[in-house]
Amino acid sequence: MSLAIFKNAGLPAVSSLSTTLRSLQKESLGVVFLKMDKSGHWVFGVDRDEVEAGSLWAVNPFSFVHGYVAWGMGTALGEKTVAITEAKPEMGAAPNGAEKGWEYQMGVSLKCTSGVDKDLEARFMTNSLGGKRALQEFAAEVANQIDKDPSKPVPIVLLKNSDYMHKLYSRLYNPVFEIKNWISMEGEAEVVLPAPKRRRMAV
Image 1 (cartoon, rainbow, N blue to C red):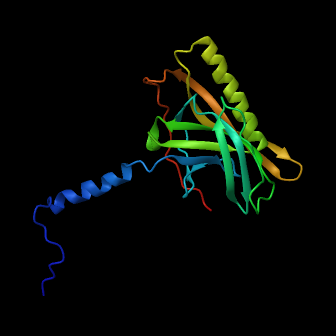
Image 2 (cartoon, one colour):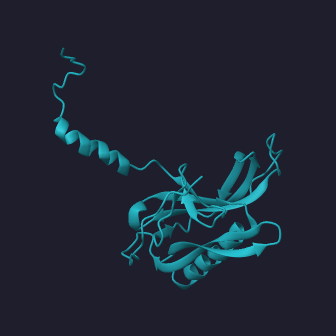
Image 3 (cartoon, helix red, strand yellow):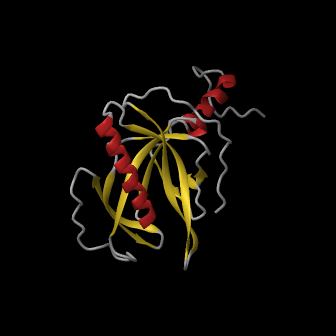
């Protein structure tokens, strides 16, 4: 028995459909969140995909932000963030269920320029002491570069980590933005370092 479910009049050949469907994998789904997990690996997205080792990332020097976040049961219950050029936002009362009330946070936006995640846009936000210190030091390096050569204010970085032993929590990791090059806002070719493929982190 024949089942005529869809009429194919005016539709492209089925043989070309697979190529079109696979192209959806390359479509941008917007900005993803980037973070460093407890084992010191950089991961992003809901699937916690690991950043490809050796991949290069461009940091938008205009994207530094600061503000406050309120966490409860592992969920951001509220967030107030503005550009670093603006005064910190008014906090007001913290949302119900916020475990530590409002906590100061900082952040920056990045775009991958090499490897399997090329063109991926990500946002890094942190309220940890080590993360905020890393961003403060990194921001100072960007400021020094702008003073020296404002035509190339965009840092190209490797996402790395540093670690130390904590008396209570054993080994802890902090983010490191290792600057490899400086480019203009319009971009330019840079050396792509060879890198192995990333792996998905276990939950």
